[in-house]
Amino acid sequence: MSKESYFIGIDVGTGSVRAAIIDIDGKLVSLDVQPIITHNPQHDIYEQSTDNIWINISKCVRNIMQVSGLSPENIKGIGFDATCSLVVLDKHGLPQSVDASSNFTNNDLNIILWADHRAIEQADRINATKHEVLRYVGEKISPEMEIPKTLWLKENLPKEKWDSIGQLMDLPDFLTYKATGSTARSTCSLTCKFSYLPQHKESGWMPRFFEKIGLGCLIEEGFARLGGNDPSSVLGPGKPVGSGLTEEAAKELGLFSGTPVGAAIIDAYAGAVATLGATPFEDERTDMLNSLTQSLKTNGPSRLAIICGTSSCHITMAPSPLFVQGVWGPYQSVLIEDMFCAEGGQSSTGQLIDFIVNTHPAIEEAKEKSNETGQSIYAYLANHLVVLQERQGLKHVQALTKYLHIYPDFHGNRSPLADPTLRGSIVGLSLDKSIDDLALRYLATLQAIACQTRQIIEALNKQKYVIDTLCMSGGLCKSPLFVQILADVTHCRIIMPESTDAAVVIGAAMLGMKASGISSELWEIMVKFGRASNSVVNPTKDEELKDINSRRYNVFLSMLEDQYRYRKMMG
Image 1 (cartoon, rainbow, N blue to C red):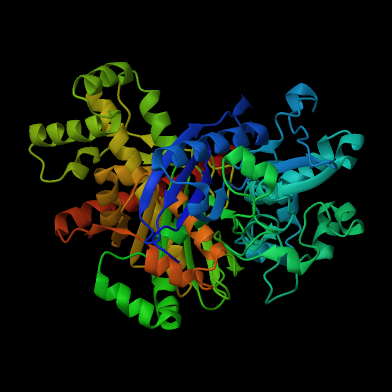
Image 2: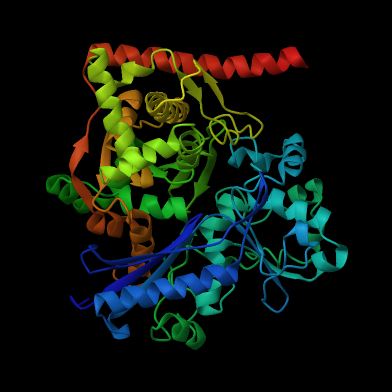
């Protein structure tokens, strides 16, 4: 392709839509972000609107095209990623309500967001079956997945509304449907979130599972509402969908009809696309490209993509299926053909940091001071920690929280325990309401998130993974303090993306590259066009700091054991 070839990526996160243009070398050209609306009537209920999301996608795409000065003919491919949220459409392809607070009459609210935990009871009943399908989700299905949510809908919608549903789609697949008119599903969404079995085991759906959990009605209709009943309509990441952009979608986006659209993936996997093949070292990149098959088998099991946003996802892959308790997968061909992905995660990371910081009595005072110095609140707190370190004469910032510890499962545990009922805890609180105390709680939260990441890595490595490199993307990349703590606690080197703000959406754009025909191998695109920053963050070699982190990790594990012990005591 010529130097005048460009690609668009569209990323729908929890709170915003991003669109980006990358050039033929994978370099970011233009980026736009627009907020989206979330309806949160109860603490565990989160709903969104496909209409609201598509309107903001259109705004983003038009903005990046205007800023870049490119014309539609320059755009050779488009890729989408999104959160793994459940979209409900009626038999005419129109939004259908999931909102119980309106008695299911508000059709604007037709998405159950990934973070919604209304289906905990349904997930518990599904898990009680101990069906073989559950092996592929770490033995326990999460209420964040689409099958428990589908069961909730069947049990809570009036019968006429359940019967009127035409499509139950993961949000990434809805976006390609909206763009192309094709109801083809992605291997990524169906396998990871709909209990579509990996092809090495059985082809597609397992009817006995759906019968046993109370969704036998889906069998009778040939799984038409879930899709995937025709294997040819289940597409690997980046494979062309339909005939490209429809005339209607092209008009809304300001692009040409027929522009190739790649099969979508879940947002975390887009972060993996952008980072797992990236390296700042040209000799390493050359070696990987010269032996793509071998580099995939070697780097797959040793690299872990960590996509840090509202929540965090951890994705790695191996050439053979490896089962890990409490970790989702192995998922075949959801990222790279015939590779098996394992997916761990933390349900609340960026969200947890915001909660700890924004509920502290000193937050307004801290915001005023951060504004005065032109820093974000988090940069201000990181600098304030250095002041406290110097004031106390400590060698390491991490020693400030010697007697302050946080267990981070404020929104339940995704991995490696798969227990959505777990809750957070704090040990070491005082009556201090100062900025000093706020900064210490911020630090303890970062340390807690890092400790849980280590716990996930240890679970993976016990099952023949050899994780020694973390490939990061997402908002927490902006915190040098967190990145160094993560390297120190996990004992892994960290490769950072060239663009901390856009790594995930760049991964989506790489799907557009694949759809355009630039390469038939996604791994080649990941290695050739993945762009890492020039620096690698290495774990500490300081023995004193290693000891501090080791003791803190032991406290973390003890806090988890204590929570289960307290529950047993209370009956």
